[in-house]
Amino acid sequence: MNHRRFFIFLAAILLINSGNVLAAKEKPVQSSYTVKSPDRNISITLWKQADAFLYTVKAFGTEIIKDSELGLSIKDDLESQKVTSVMSVGNVISRSQWKPLWGKRSVVDNDFNESSFMVASTNGRVVIKVRAYNDGIAFRYQKQTDADRTLVENTQFRFAGDYTAWYYNGERHNIGPEKLSDASGERLPVMTVQASDDLFFAIHEAALNEDCWPMRLTSEKGSTLFRVAEEQIEATEYIGAWRTIIIGKTPGKLVDSHLIELLNPEAEGDFSWVKPGIALWDWRIDGAVSPVDGYRYKMDYPSWVKMIDFAAENGFSHLVLDANWYGPEFEKDSDPTKGDKARDVQRIIKYGKEKGVGVWLYLNDVAGTNYPIEETLAQYEEWGASGVKYGFMNGNPQEKLRKTISITQLCAKHHLMVDYHDYPVHPYGQMRTFPNAITREFCKAQLDGRQIFQPKTFVTSVFVNMIAGPIDMNNGFMELHQGRTTRKDNNQEVPSTASAEIARTMITWSGATVIPDIPEYYQKYPELLEFLAAEKQPWKESITLDGKIGEYIVMARQNADGNWLVAAATNEDAREIEIDLNFLGKGKWNAQLTQDAADTDFRTNRETYQSKSMTVTRKSKVTMTMAPGGGSVLLITK
Image (cartoon, rainbow, N blue to C red; front, top):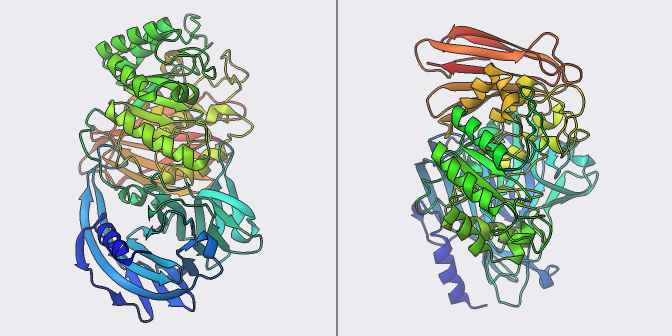
């Protein structure tokens, strides 16, 4: 290895994401080194022991990860690798703020303490950068190697107890609750862990790049040791993803965290054209019959006009046109710029602009691969489209990651927001760098299978999948009578209630809240439609007020107008929850509480609800009532 070249590389990488650099001299680590969060409640301690470099993590006085290995190895030299020395090579303190274009809140504290270590071993050197935030720990690897050497990662998470965990599980109900020792084989992040009644943490990653593989975790039954699955890393100057441990005293603190986004670089350039908000959707309306006049909706221009008009009346931002508008989506000769309805698409985009409503266009990976994608996206920009929904991406995880990065960048270049569907790469905070990366289907969209999506699915996934970032779950289906619908695709019943469906639209964090029903079914519930129309982004504040994984969640968000929205959803059990309104500003507020009625039940009677108005202050308490599978919403206006 060229040592001089390595130190030039080291000097460069120490500048990445740097704040106030305190020290950059090499200093031997004699025994151990501890990096503490600014509030000193969370710490990571690192030390050399025999031939390895180890770490342990403590939170609020409790050890949660013990004696776990860090490092990168040369694949062909795994047996012979021995850590020979550890040097402290830099410290950084950051006390700053990030003001996102859109997100969970308008101002985010970016406070952390960082230390970097150069770990020398018998097969080279690796720099390990470690950060401690007030809500978690993060570390990443940076290594230079010869072009013909393959790297593998050695990261371990040896948990200090046999805790309970939940995991992302693709387009299925999440795995869990599961004891760590019962896990066997592969598990996918986000991995949400409950260590005690007042200590929770989540394992994920941030800031992936083209050289990375999306993380997988492996374990053996009977053990509490998890490893980052071995992937062959082919890179001469490798900067890995941040491995993250988000920590909080409640599961809601994990949901409210910004650690994942903060580990990504800030955006460069003008993204003021990105407009988050509610989006109508033409895929699920196909075949729906209006209960008012019998009109049958289709995926065609007359139905699109009706949807645009409804969006404009209620201040909704977008309409998403889904698959097959340019021809059968899986056929190679379906041209994504000249297909079946291309002229009608251009007409509806123009009509939407007149009404102040943007139009998204679906693009399948078949067309994205077989036609020049930049030319396609440039054409969509010329037409005036506002976004792209990209579906069914092919390839192994690294190939999909590289394509996701490339398409996101191209969409940004052509002023297009983007939503990835059908087993996308998990979110990793990229919306900080590319605010047009507005959501993705990192969940089970709830209309795709009643046998899979149950009330418990929602109140589990918001504490697992949603920790990774904005997700597109397509809540808000309002044709809730018992029995099948007339819709062409997935016409089964939805296991929910009217109040729950609207509550879920607000609880689910997404830059594009894609709702799946026709105007008449929203108009059938005027109080719930009023709440939905009040979901005006960008959010000024978000607070998870209460919740228990797999059981219920209560969320409060302050909208762009300064009004507050509170939403609660439950699993299959009915419940009442008293919430404290101490997050309100001074003075009196008008409040409208809309929730399940006494006879509501997701299994037998989904449509009934009750609504009442009241005056509240920041000293008020409100009881939110939820039927089995139900929900409750509270709209608070000045």
